[in-house]
Length: 375
Image (spheres, rainbow, N blue to C red):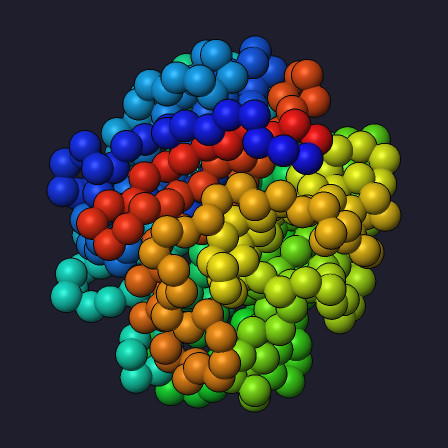
């Protein structure tokens, strides 16, 4: 595995102040061969002006055009901001967007309450586009009640029975002083997000000691089997565990529990299923040296060939806050606003190369980058 080429999707260094900090990557290759990158941009990594931008490439990532410049910040008469967006192609040229909107009616409040670690109220919203993301219509909502603090954790999945699976995570509300319990969830919809079945638990520790954050899901193209990778945190020890993995049935209704230790340290990890038993994980190595790496599994994520992993990106800033040792739980929210790279996603190109997108930069700007890998 080695890098063939690299470049920039969106150069935040040249962008206006309200688009200077990018994150929350999503990557889609359409049936017509377009590449679409959706991502969040704002004036900081936690800002009440954050919004979703979409860039398009017609030449497999060599050049990019900004085709969507953001939604109105107000939703249902309330001021808010758009935190994450992800795309799936329902039919050639027809997209479904899956978006996370947070209430920011008081723009002075941070996303996470420093006293309780609860998060602001949010909504999971869907819309369709018939022109590859240049306009949006037919809005509807995934009703995530009783949870108030929810966030999408990737694009909808096409499941074996034709339903779509919508992944998200749920956490406690802003002023809830209780310790809180985290859930990684999946909602099945038989009609492209118009109606939903009850939530399926992908991962949850009923003791609330272990949190399975930022689930990223992959689908085996030949069998429909599902794999989930998690940034895993032990609240009792006050530090991260290794990345963990769980496996789901092709219909998304049943998952192995509890998730298993994947055998390597990291945070957010995106699984790209390549066919057969092969899975490529592109993950954030928040340890020294801080980097983004790609590693292969040939047994559907049960073991990983760490001796042959590829460094996709290495931070020039050196060690970042919170990369080792114990941390107070509330410190993680502050750390997330300091980290200068992360959120990788990947897709397979027709010739077998892998296209990887992620955000990276420094304390003045964080752009959207791409790397092309030969396997």
